[in-house]
Length: 134
Image (tube, rainbow, N blue to C red; front, side):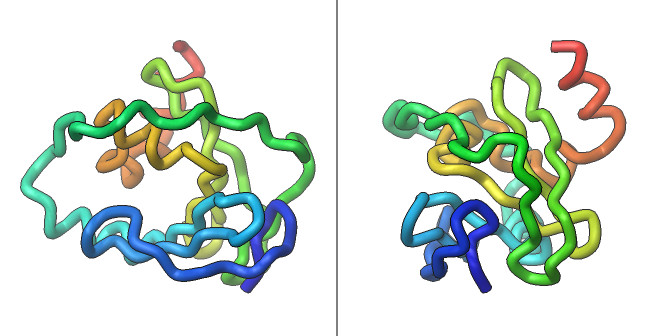
């Protein structure tokens, strides 16, 4: 399994307690399997509020923006989805296995805005319509 940005290897990390993910050793992006996210989300008490955290580090522009990215798990192309709600970046999602790619610091930015527990909604038509309207 290799990073969809630079083909580097991953290391296992936890984005939150009980939420396993993979982090690229080169670009520090995160690969999150949707099943792992859903299992973590089910254990959470309702909607999570913004969590106290240090300001997320600056989101670094993607050096290969526009380049096609492939899913590290199944090899299908990833599709970009705007986050909206005042967040000015997009997440990449595999339409086959539903895995999610987040560039460096994007998880922290979602967490700081209390959106990290809404990933299961972000890729739906209602959320995407709202994101395009921002």
